[in-house]
Length: 411
Image (tube, rainbow, N blue to C red; front, top):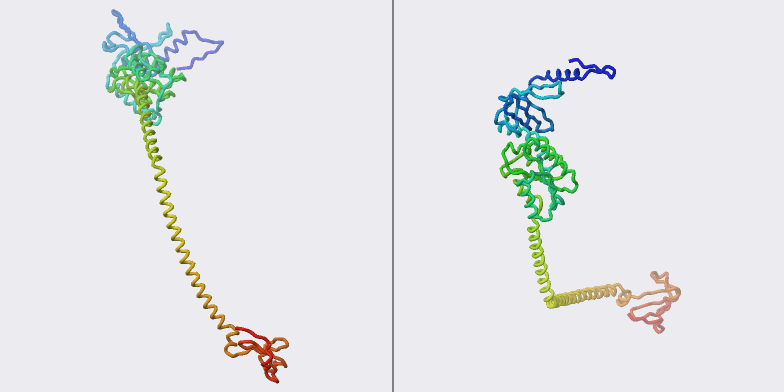
């Protein structure tokens, strides 16, 4: 189709634009469409029936018209359907609608298969990974609650939370929990509570229902909104047997709204009981320790006296042993030293010149200079002769002058 050429100086009439849009839409032909019926109008006596078909993952809807026999009686608002339709553009009103020629309800098997495909897709993206889940705070300042207006789920959560912690504060956002607008309202509530800095945890609660009733809580848009939330989210949808995909994405999956109340806050009475029990055990432990120490202190003088006496006895024995060892060692040293002295004295005596003289030898020196005479040629007119007991002067030519001793000496 040729492009429509226009300028500010050469505009085209509205009818031309409308005709071009109609031509583009008519080229689409018949298509198969899946969606959810948001509104349904069955007018008695009117052959044409009107309904609004919305996308389950986006806020987009289209008006659908069909003949009376095309729409099965089992289909009602909120039903998921697959229909074959041709787009129609009404030039006079400038509106787009679908003219359906066949409408089929989506059965439970198809819904479960679609949920399984979505589950595998989100698991592959890591939205169910355990390492991305956050632990809710132990004592939340404020609890955000997303639930139906005046519903049993709201009463279960609020009453059980306040029974466990009477001071708990809530910010409750009431939404549609089934039907065509449920997904958009729950997503909007989660985003608003996540943006509130005072809300520390978000609880999404709803009572049980059929698989079709719980489909909004397996919707991809809601699951991605919960995964993107910075605030921890607790899922409390249905009964214990219900398992929407929200349970896999939420940080904590509670089996029921009552179970969510037990998980979101601690039981203050039970905590106080445990605190009192711990305090009692600590007090008893301290008292036992003090009693043990008192008994130890009471027996301390006697034990100290015994310890000092034993220590003194050991030290006295050690001193006596050391004294005996010292005496024996000193005696041995003195005995060995005495033997060495006797041996050395004997050697000295054997090597002494006096011993040589005692054997009859004499030492002859010249009187003039005291030089030893070893050769007869060295003798002069006056000599000195030393014997074992004294000494005397001698003349080598006249002989010794015994009557004139020079001096005396004792050995």
